[in-house]
Image (cartoon, rainbow, N blue to C red; front, side, top):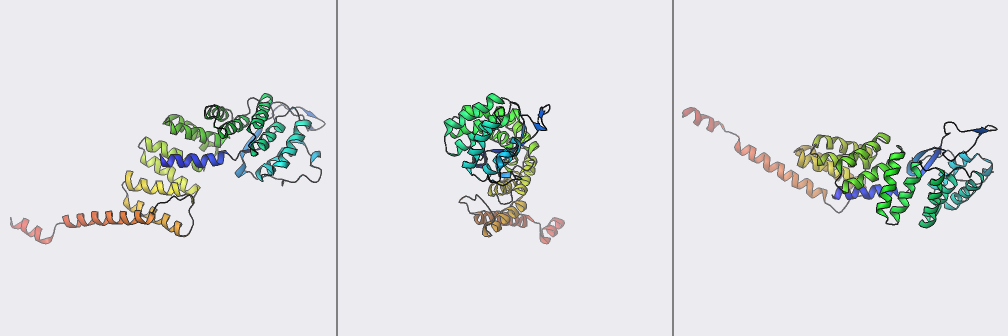
Length: 317
């Protein structure tokens, strides 16, 4: 359960970061004079802010208002990523006036409001965006994020499930819903959303850790090992995945040699300050305890080993 709570905290930290969008032309969108005419159902590709790499810096100089509304959303994304909220608000206001059929002005204004913890305004803006595009999973995701920040857990859960069902690219929504399912011990439901997350993002650390939890509950130790190894590769500095893998080797897989090697590597990383989120535990004590257990076991095996005298006595008898 400690591993699970830790994973939820990590997911929550990402969850609170929000999402950016990359505009895509919707099938069947009309064009006027070569420019795409915005519609209520305009679709975009969702990206996690922490992974977003905008093609434009957050700069409102140089006649940005003459850009197409699509390019303005790219500019807004860069400003969200750099947390330049006054610029986000300015772009949101401009989009709300000059691209009123699209939901993106209201969306960016909601992000700016949430950054100030003005959750009432953020909710209002998101509800406006959803009126224009009710099937856009991103807006349900952001609404769930705002609801969660207000402590409205039931409402947030419903919004996040809807977001996950509507938009396959919303990895954070899939993982967060899965983690909540794990808390409720609904392992089959958790697995469903974790697999959706890994389909969208195969190296998502939290999803890999979640799948390891699901398979551990099924006592599929080999399967859990596979996901923990993948989690270690995905985030080499994370303490929890390395600690869980070492513990799996030590207890469930009964492989003290692999466990000792894993603990030693973790201790080396600790000394080199190459491990993150490490709690107050002594890896060195774990290493010494495991060494003592292995030495005691080897001694018992050695004590039971037959000697040449024993063999001669058996022959004489």
